[in-house]
Image 1 (cartoon, rainbow, N blue to C red):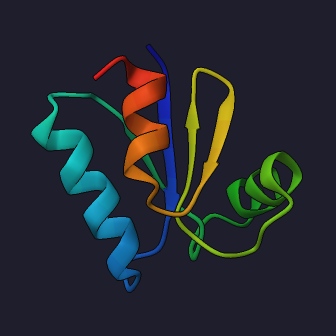
Image 2: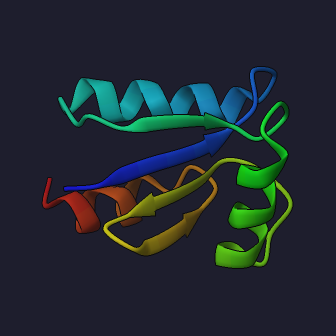
Length: 76
C-alpha cells in the first residue's frame, strides 16, 4: 500500500490525519508542501486543491481528514 500525506506543520487536520494513520499502523510518506514547492504543485495537480491535508492512497485522492474515506481505501 502506498500512502502519501501532503501537509504542513501548522495544519491541525494534517496532524489528526497522520495520527489516525499511525493508530491503524499504516505507514505513510509525509510531504510538507510548505517547504517543498514541487510537491505542492504535484498535490494541486492531483487534487485540484490548495488546502491540506491531501492524502494519496494507492492513487486515490482524499481531500481533508475524511476518516470514512481513509478507512474504505485502506480496508480498515
